[in-house]
Figure 1 (cartoon, helix red, strand yellow):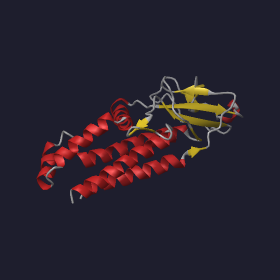
Figure 2: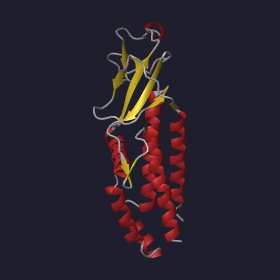
Figure 3: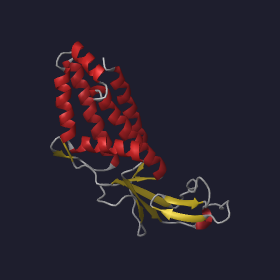
Figure 4: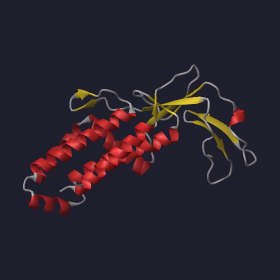
Amino acid sequence: MFEGAETKLQDARTAIKRLQALVKPPLATNIQIKSGPSGVSGDVVGTDDPVAFSEAFSSCVAQIRSVGDAVLVTSRNQTKIEEREKRWPGFKNWRKEKISECRSDELMKFIDARRNDDLHEGDRCLSFTMHPYNFSSERVGAALPPGAALRVSGTGAYWIFPDTPDERHPYVVQDGSVFTAAIINPPTMHKGEPLPSTDPVTVCAMAEKYYTELLREVRRLFK
């Protein structure tokens, strides 16, 4: 029962492990180059690869939110909702209660909104800061097209190639720099209690825990 939700839960856990593997102790320097949407940032984590970290965080949010869809069923699939109600009387009322709970919970609203923003708009909610301590432009390699320009942002150094479909060249070697990542306007509460941290990994882990408990509850109630 709910095999699809179990599969998505395992996907979410795999995504979180991949995100955790990219985390390093945060290290600040006197020089800080920031990038990302404006707003209040949450707690930071360190990473050596901001590009991979951003992709892994996006994957975490998407996989975690998919667990909820698999358990609760989206409103677009009324046929499946009716089938579950017929098989497990009381499912529709339970589903309605849990959807209301998710919509009133700060953490779960964040996961839902961020998944939709990323999926439909390409918007990311992470802010990165580059902390260089031994940076030299001589170590970034030669620019290939004429007129290419070297740029530096909170996610590192990269080339801009003019008049090409792919203007932003893959990131150059970031030896001599470390990075920190934080969530812009992160959730701070969950189930009426403050989150232990607002860093990206903790936020994802707490949301995954919620859906793990949700899956256990639905299996217990509707055997």
